[in-house]
Image (cartoon, rainbow, N blue to C red):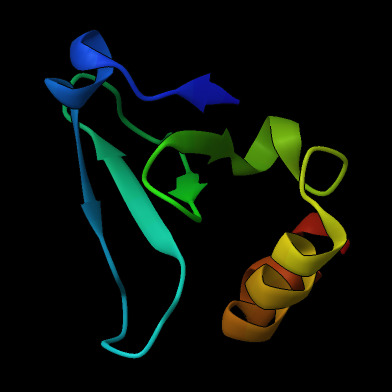
Length: 76
């Protein structure tokens, strides 16, 4: 998990895949292939290293609901 500070804010942007989603996806301008999300725009979770053990139960349930493909791919 990364805490979003000034140095991180300059390197990424938050976006939603669908208007009604709760989860923010994170693009890092200086990295290719990194899959990251945020629930609050204050901390960023890396899908490949943090899912599911660094997600709270509520975060995992929300992620799995909004992203069934990634749930299946990541073995959630």
